[in-house]
Image 1 (cartoon, rainbow, N blue to C red):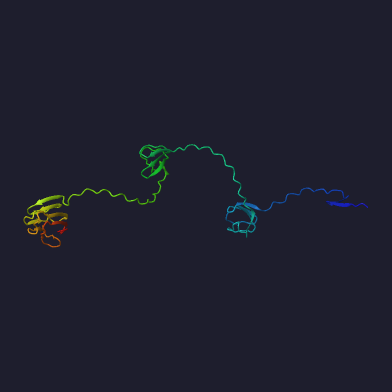
Image 2: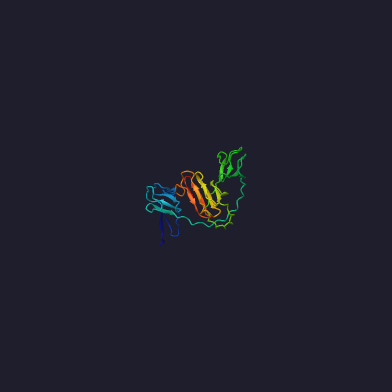
Length: 276
């Protein structure tokens, strides 16, 4: 007894022998779209499940699986899953060809600014400020580069540099010529006299002498020298011109050293001796 196979198609039956083939049915209709929505680059804010974003920090794409509030970044796995990993860095591309040369600029360097007419795009150095400027509007004569209507700052003056290291000491200069003697005038005296400022007196001690002081005043000075060596016998008396003191004493001063030298100075009120 031969075998038979019963096939069922859409409610109909038919019989066939085992050598018969099964036909393929038609393609089914396209299913409905999924509910994932692309939101672009992630920014702080609330997201709902199935919204997908690109996270610029790590270059990956993520899909939200639990609603967020505002600050749950895509790396927070409590709210997000990785949707797509960041791709590997691609191989370096071939070098591009050189671009064409640009056109020459229009800046026209004029050197140091001086009073006169300038036209737009002419540039100058302004020594007053140490900076360079470019003309933006034609000038007539006296619009200096600090006038912002006509000029723009082109190059700012640099900061002052650090102080350099101290240089080595220079060699000593040659000695100067000997200076003049202390008094600007030298006078020989063989009689009584009144002293004058800035004068050296060579006084003969062949007899006693009275030397009267000038009236006291600031910066007065004079010098007395026993020129004959008999002052111990024939004394010199320094006579006050008024009530001033000599060496702190309100009295005349006696000089009595053979060959002695004395320097007198006044502070404007009283007299003092430097030596003698």
